[in-house]
Image (cartoon, rainbow, N blue to C red):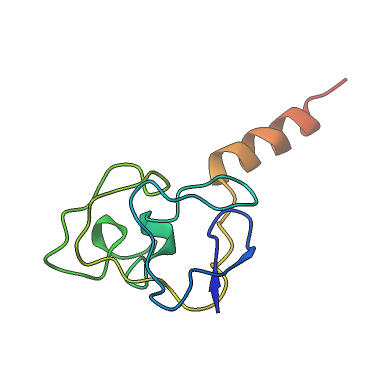
Length: 97
């Protein structure tokens, strides 16, 4: 099962299971050939990638030219909330009149 990293929709890529650099999700229009859809993507790894030969792009959501890209099986792991934004929201709630 191949899913979109942005909306979680299940994707049907045909027999080849390949997406080009310009292909996008039919549901949310997010690029499919992006780091967050790759099996090697790991947020805690150096540069967000477990592939030592990969040249990491700055934007993990943008389409890229990585030749080591292989679709991740299953749904994407949920993104962690921004700790700075969460702390600011708590402070605003604390000091709100």
